Length: 475
Image 1 (cartoon, rainbow, N blue to C red):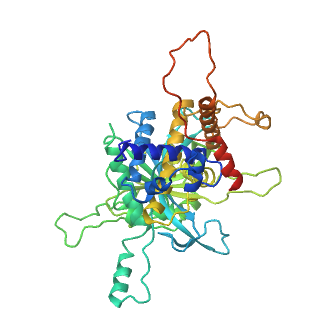
Image 2 (image 1 turned 30 degrees about the vertical axis):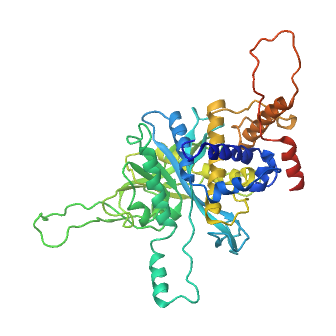
Image 3 (image 1 turned 90 degrees about the vertical axis):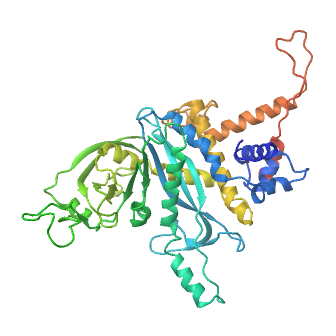
């Protein structure tokens, strides 16, 4: 409530937040008004919530971060994943829209689509024990990452040179670096946060010089790296060297094998490390090398190089072998246990599941708004509602819950137990909301005996099931 300047603004945001989760049709602002039953009243204030009202969308995630930390122990690090996502748009006048590579395009033919780019950080909420649930990623940051606009045809030569210079500092790597620093500051503001370690798992697009050389203190980065990256050993003093020797001191020692060469080196034995993934505990074969220096990270940042052999599998007997590519990782903390490094990076897949649920179930990016503030704040508002839903589900049903209150259909009675999905939480929320709406519309019957004190005010409920169904049918 402290995010908004006025109480009525908070009430309007709470109503739209529930409508964002309970909406059955397209998740546009009009669809949220249909779900809330406000089609016959003035709706301009609901649109102004995103375009004109003064509130910071990133502050909506502060309560989510506090809720995640409540589940962790005092000495347990906060594991997060960083990734960017694309919200497809077709309007040419929508703010921050540009052509981007379609991630669903085949590798032999790159396609381009118009869309908005956002940067998301999800905190990993691990289960109590390794089982069918594993962990769950809860978003704690969702910010726009628009590209620098190109100069127009009528721009001067000085403006073109300035735009070219700014492209070196205004890119996805710098935005990711600033997002990691903002998450570290957000963690430091929480009780006990300054002493807690932040572990950030990223993919290869953020494992570069811009991010590694500007990591905030008490932050560990785990990321993928190229198989031909050049590593060096720490410098060792040569025989006969003295502090007064002429020349610059050596920063790097002998050259170490590349990740691909380390994988093929038969003299280096494989180690077996267990980690949880895909519903069960797997035994991974890895090779490691530490300490290692990478010129991109700097001579003052020792790293641990990890090579993971592919865990091959077949979908059925006689089918082709899948997942035959190895993985190469680096960790900025060479002393971190290998089991923890591997498990923290495997949890990064949860942010991909968050992107899928946000777009398919929550409707992030479906709002048809073109104002710059609305185009940036409405998706963040929807993701914040999704994060609060996941956090509420973890508090009510537990971190390792496999069932909600509603019974499963008959075709799901014989499946293996899995964690409570986002669809289960949405179904449970809609059932509770519409049950309250039914109670509010039910007439009061006289009773001879009243066990409880009668209320002087009737129950008010704004979400209408009839309006939501009509909107879904006409959408």
